[in-house]
Image (cartoon, rainbow, N blue to C red; front, side, top):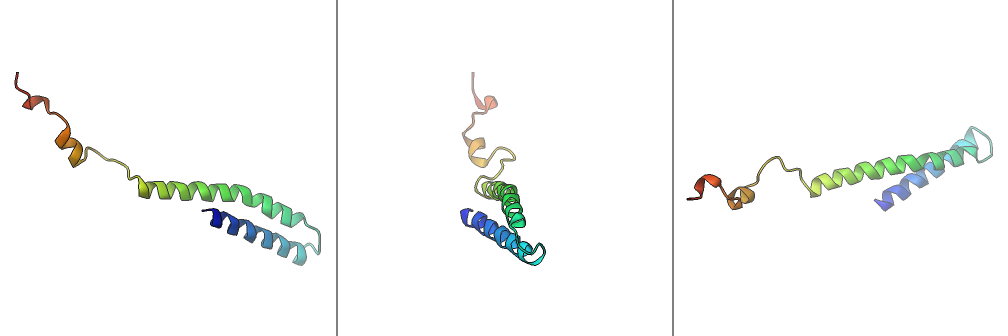
Length: 80
Protein backbone atom coordinates (compact mmCIF):
# COMPACT_ATOMS: atom_id res chain seq x y z
CA UNK A 1 0.00 0.00 0.00
CA UNK A 2 2.91 2.32 0.76
CA UNK A 3 4.31 1.80 -2.72
CA UNK A 4 0.95 2.66 -4.27
CA UNK A 5 0.80 5.91 -2.33
CA UNK A 6 4.35 6.80 -3.37
CA UNK A 7 3.52 6.06 -7.01
CA UNK A 8 0.43 8.29 -6.85
CA UNK A 9 2.46 11.12 -5.30
CA UNK A 10 5.15 10.81 -7.98
CA UNK A 11 2.51 10.81 -10.71
CA UNK A 12 1.03 13.98 -9.22
CA UNK A 13 4.49 15.55 -9.13
CA UNK A 14 5.18 14.78 -12.78
CA UNK A 15 1.73 15.94 -13.86
CA UNK A 16 2.27 19.22 -12.01
CA UNK A 17 5.71 19.70 -13.56
CA UNK A 18 4.32 18.94 -17.01
CA UNK A 19 1.47 21.44 -16.58
CA UNK A 20 3.90 24.08 -15.32
CA UNK A 21 6.22 23.59 -18.31
CA UNK A 22 3.65 23.31 -21.08
CA UNK A 23 0.68 25.41 -20.04
CA UNK A 24 1.98 27.94 -17.53
CA UNK A 25 5.49 28.45 -18.98
CA UNK A 26 7.41 28.21 -15.73
CA UNK A 27 6.45 28.67 -12.13
CA UNK A 28 5.61 25.95 -9.68
CA UNK A 29 1.98 26.60 -8.77
CA UNK A 30 0.57 23.61 -10.68
CA UNK A 31 3.17 21.31 -9.12
CA UNK A 32 2.26 22.44 -5.62
CA UNK A 33 -1.48 22.15 -6.32
CA UNK A 34 -1.12 18.65 -7.81
CA UNK A 35 1.05 17.35 -4.97
CA UNK A 36 -1.21 18.83 -2.26
CA UNK A 37 -4.29 17.66 -4.18
CA UNK A 38 -2.94 14.11 -4.27
CA UNK A 39 -2.97 13.87 -0.46
CA UNK A 40 -6.75 13.37 -0.07
CA UNK A 41 -6.76 11.09 -3.12
CA UNK A 42 -4.02 8.98 -1.50
CA UNK A 43 -6.01 8.80 1.73
CA UNK A 44 -9.19 7.72 -0.06
CA UNK A 45 -7.33 5.09 -2.07
CA UNK A 46 -5.67 3.76 1.10
CA UNK A 47 -9.01 3.65 2.92
CA UNK A 48 -10.78 1.86 0.09
CA UNK A 49 -7.95 -0.62 -0.39
CA UNK A 50 -7.90 -1.36 3.33
CA UNK A 51 -11.66 -1.98 3.34
CA UNK A 52 -11.37 -4.36 0.39
CA UNK A 53 -8.51 -6.29 1.98
CA UNK A 54 -10.31 -6.54 5.32
CA UNK A 55 -13.40 -7.97 3.61
CA UNK A 56 -11.22 -10.64 2.05
CA UNK A 57 -9.47 -11.49 5.33
CA UNK A 58 -12.49 -11.29 7.65
CA UNK A 59 -15.66 -12.43 5.85
CA UNK A 60 -19.00 -11.20 7.15
CA UNK A 61 -20.98 -13.74 9.17
CA UNK A 62 -24.51 -14.23 7.88
CA UNK A 63 -25.74 -16.63 10.53
CA UNK A 64 -24.63 -19.43 12.79
CA UNK A 65 -21.84 -21.52 11.44
CA UNK A 66 -21.75 -25.31 11.70
CA UNK A 67 -19.30 -25.16 14.62
CA UNK A 68 -21.44 -22.73 16.61
CA UNK A 69 -24.60 -24.76 16.04
CA UNK A 70 -23.01 -27.99 17.20
CA UNK A 71 -21.42 -26.52 20.35
CA UNK A 72 -24.26 -24.35 21.56
CA UNK A 73 -26.64 -26.07 24.00
CA UNK A 74 -30.19 -26.70 22.91
CA UNK A 75 -32.66 -26.16 25.72
CA UNK A 76 -35.09 -28.74 24.32
CA UNK A 77 -32.46 -31.49 24.69
CA UNK A 78 -31.88 -30.87 28.41
CA UNK A 79 -33.72 -33.35 30.68
CA UNK A 80 -35.20 -32.01 33.92
